[in-house]
Each structure stands twice: as structure tokens, then as C-alpha cells.
Image (cartoon, rainbow, N blue to C red; front, side):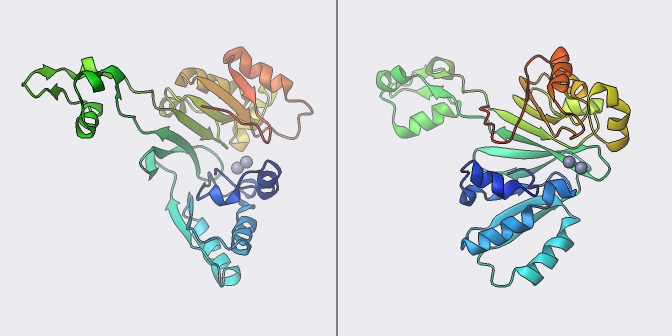
Length: 270
Ligand SMILES: [Zn+2]
Ligand SMILES: [Zn+2]
């Protein structure tokens, strides 16, 4: 899960998200609208008898608050909160497992802020089904071929890997960027991302306000998506000053047509 604002738990229940499937929480920055739901969630997990570790990735300044929470409200908690502190001042990998990595990218706001890029790890080559029979390949041969090796038959003939395999499926990526002012280097860090969530707090007419508060306009979000070569853009985190978000969406689409304004409960496939 990324960020945990005050209403998060209510919304998770409303949209039937299984709370016990959340094991890693990535916090972009320490502003209330992004973290005030954490402590309620910690308590709920205690009441639910959670046993699995809960990993929290956030700016190191959250440490004090976490420690206070643990000593004041965490007595007898049946699970561990494992804190992974960062400083958000440089790009770095903060998570990795067999299937994916999470990279932190520094953003610009009134406090240190991290954007997160979730990337699938490159997959193995796909073996051509018919080759398994033709060359009577065993499990070990198949593993080696999927890793890129050529195959040597029993009578010493070398079958090049390219004849045996098809390219792997392209690894997918998703980036989450909020709250941030727009700056050009950001697009480089987001190069080629498949799905980009970017904040669009303000309309173009309030560009000055965006700059002053460390936020972006919808058109700026779209320009970054365009420059990064993103496949698709999602915008959100709209200021409550706008009665309708249609003008913001139109401003973004004028620059980057494949833009969607997101609402709570929306689901997107990468
Ligand atoms: Zn903020
Ligand atoms: Zn915010």
C-alpha cells in the first residue's frame, strides 16, 4: 500500500480489500493527509490478531512517532512493525523480492518526499513448446535454455538459444508521484514507465500557487508523462477548491491524451 490517509481503513473495507494481504506500506512523506490513517490501521491489526510482520517504509523522521506509538499503545501487539527509514534525497532501491523491486525517487515539496517506482524483474525467456519434444528436453535443460544458454544434443550438435526461445514478456512498471512540484529531471527518472500516477492538485490558472505550495498543475503532470514516454497517466490529489475536475482533465489531455482522473475505488491494470 502507498500512503495511508485518515479515511484509508474505511475505504479499504468499502472496496472489500483484504487487510491481511497488506504487508508493506510505503509512505511518500510525513504530512497528515498521507499518514494519519497508519495508527488506526496498526490498532486494527492488533485487534485482528495479526501475526505477520508489517513493513513500513518512510522518511526516518517517522521513527520517533512510531516508537511513541509502540510504547504507549503497542503493548501486547501480536505482530512486529518493521521500520525501513529513508531520507528521500537520492534515487535508491528500497525493496526487492523474487518478482519485483521498488525504487525511491526524490520529489520536491515543502518537506522531503519520495516517489515510488514498482518494477517487475525481467522474466526468463519463453521456450518454444515444440522444442521440448523435438530435442527431448529435461527440466534442467529447460531451465538453462530459459536462462539464455544454447542446447547441446546428445550427439554434440549445438542448437542456438534463439532457435529454442521466444522473447520474455516485457516487465511492467508503475510509478506513484505525489506531492511534488514539477521539475524536468523527474521525467528522466520516470523514463518508459507503463502506468504513471501523478498529482494534479491545481489548474493552470493557479500555476503560481502550485509552485508556492510544492504542487503541480494537471498540465505539468501531463508534460512529465509526455517527456518520460509513459504509456498512460492517472491524475489525482485535486485541490478541493475546484467544484469540477473536468477543466483539469481537459488541460492534461491537451498535452497527454491518455490521461484519466482517478477516483476512490478505481482499479487499473498495468
Ligand atoms: Zn504534502
Ligand atoms: Zn498531500
